[in-house]
Figure (tube, rainbow, N blue to C red):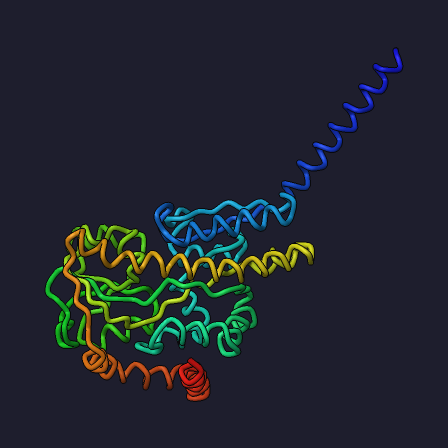
Length: 338
């Protein structure tokens, strides 16, 4: 065998070994990220695409991420349970966490935040971090960042909602969230908990009269096709919670854990920005699509908030005065610093 042939074979073997080694590393850590928002035209999947790109690049491809939008891996309850038991590594959720971790319901209290700036101050501050940390302590699921689903608004097919009394008797879909259910019932409406992936067809078939969601989802889920009236009351600021199975997270090298945590914080910033842009353009597009949009004065919003006073009383009993008072102090401090 010639010297050149030997060198060629050695180089080929070395290259094959390198490629095999690289392939093995690339397959070491695979992450599925599940959520219920649309696969296209929506801020959540767009922001997760950036998260995926950044994590894969910073880990030299040793961490591989696949996203599963539009409830492909089940409704939010199934996604949460998948993360809890390890069949899904990560998820971005809104509703069902409160069923296993009631403290997170403090952010579902109606008319809590006046605007986004106040919400960000509280969510990203000491109190918001305490709630994130508490999820791991109470459930074993690690929460790594807050995102923004947005301020929630009512839509329905029966009549414009211009006063709290206009909600009476309407069947309104809510998430499986006790605070949301209590809020809708406090208006004299009939709260109807339902999985998000069942909502469009229920509206289309008239099983329910209306629902409540942020503008971005009302648009991207095309609810304007099956709903006529939108009232911009902003009754609840709805955050996303980015969660990860803690056993999987702790199985990662420390460097990769740090990268995921850093990129989750960047994801939060990106997702909030994309959501605000989508919402700002969304109201006009909903009008163009034929929805009748009602904007409420501060005075009328005050009437809506007053109608939900029993919800605050109920959750003082459920969550304790200390937690509610700590939250309200954080809100007051945020308002005074803006």
